[in-house]
Amino acid sequence: MPNRSPVIFAGVACLAALAGIVLLRAPSTRDFDGLLQPPLTSASRALARAASLAHPTDYAYALAEARLEPRGPSGTSATRLRLLNRAIILCPQCSGAHIEAAHDLWRLGRRQQALLEWRTVLALQPTQLSSAVDELARAGAKPAELMSLADEHSRHDLSRLLLARGMIDAARQVLDGGADQSSAEFHLVLAQIALEAKDLPAARAASKQALAAAPRDPRGFLMAAEVESRANDRDKAIQILTDGLRFEPMNVELNRKLLGLLMQTEKWRAIDGALADLRRALSQSGASMTEANLAAASIFEHRGQFQRALAEYQAVVASDPENPGLLLYLARAAEQAGSVTVAIDAYNAVLRLAPGQAEALAALARIQHDKKALEVLGALPSHTTAEDK
Image (cartoon, rainbow, N blue to C red; front, side, top):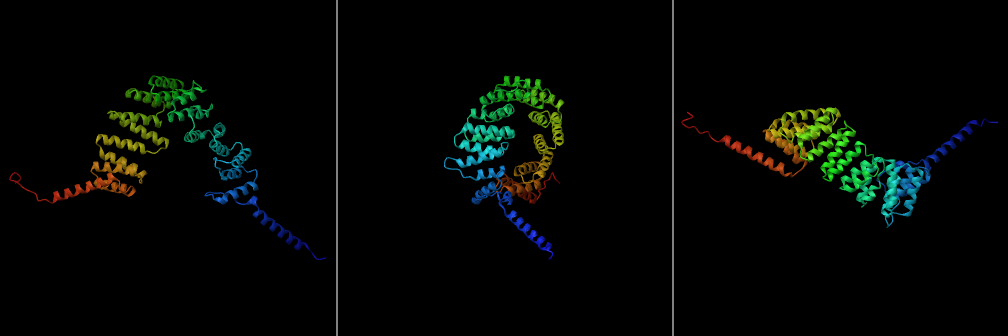
């Protein structure tokens, strides 16, 4: 009997190869992730459906299919909501489907259900609060609807967001709705609300409470200084910030605020010290030195020290050479310092980035006129008098 082993092994190998080819071409192994990358086309909907059928337990494909389902005349469709519900069932802790459901429910006028979905999103991803408020506000949400997003973790942040939109009463109600009224955070938000309401006594009292609750918190000193600044008591505000810097000498916000207030005075020695401190604080925090350079340039210009101002602007432009606004500052300072070549180069750079910029055009014309006038004056013959001889 002939040895059939090679034939058997060859047959098995062929079958394995065929099985591999079939598996590679099967829908469950297609590169759906790559095929469903933007830009999506009309064919993407069928592809998402195929991916969802091939991977019935994969949340990502279920969500992709739901997102590609067209909306009907009413703003959405029953099929789309059904698909979103399937995605939510597959992954209740995934926020994407909840966000899509919130959008569609809001379009259908089912606002309370939409808000429930948003609250689910925020429970899963608290950092979505600002974008949720922005989106709902653009969609016409009422203050009471925005207030309903609050929970024990987001109350302070939501109050600030409402305050930023001018909703003072809503911000106050959210804050009073369950926040820990002994915390520094509570009193800081309360002080901010009082400032917006132009109630300086209440703002001052709240800022003091904040400092009492957290004596070393830089935000308490900043708020207390802001209250005194609004009350036009600059010296008291400066003293408050100086006290805060004893606890946190490298805090950028405290140093920035102090320098800003001092720049409104003529206390040059204190200004120089505050500028040096801001530079150190920025350096230690790893932040850009641009704001310190700009502040220094402004200080030097105010003193008439245009060469020093020019050096500061040159440092700023070196870090952002394609910024026409900064180049314009540099050009002005160079012109004031008598560095005509630097000024011309800077004005030309402005025009390269912003063709037709009126100030740069006028400045170059003025410089050219002055240059010609000096050349004409230099070419005139000198006149001598008897006194000269």
